[in-house]
Image 1 (spheres, rainbow, N blue to C red):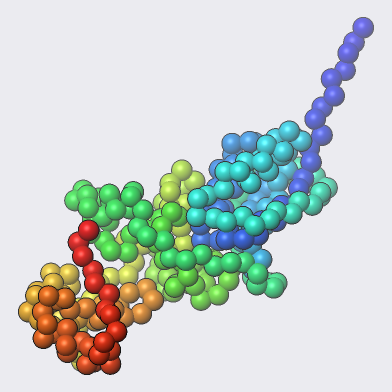
Image 2: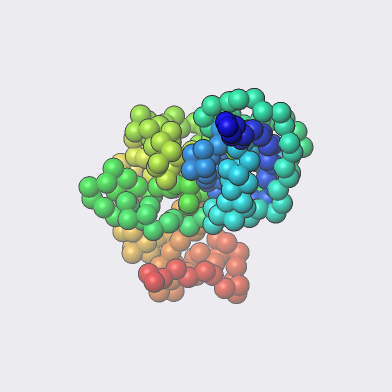
Length: 263
């Protein structure tokens, strides 16, 4: 007697993920899950959050969805997930699609994130190409809120759109095994923003910005440091005269000032 095995019928789901799910490495995370569970389809950002279409055997889809909810990136905050059944299309492979820009903007924008240990290690490694590069970042850290111009969160919608990636950054950006896979602010000394020191009239001073700014502070000067969200006025906190001048310029006679220490 012949016995006939039943083939597993593929299913396709549209999965919508809401919350803090852009700018936190969510699309690379979903891509890695799809590879892990043998699921085909795509993931993309849209103004409401993240949209996934996943196709595969029933058990694989269930495992994929469970991992998506339980293993989300640490910087993300998944508020809720919607699943819709779709007709199978027989697609092969999984891709990160270009973001969809139409629709009501509901997605939550993540804050800037302090430099992660891996990026710090690179910054202080003389053999690394990002040695002492202050704008080093990856999907786990770096600017988010302060560089976004519009949603969804993609490089063309940020202030980084003016900086064209060099071949090496492009390679990292497109490599699923790299922690900078689809890191929108990715940059390096070759292609990213650079430090510049100017005088009070905006004329560039052709010297090492860090060393020269440190020298000026020690000489009792006030230095304006442009950060991601605006300017910080800095001076030597142990110099009473320069602190007095800083208070006069800021109009803060008695209000406390922030103090930065080494550790």
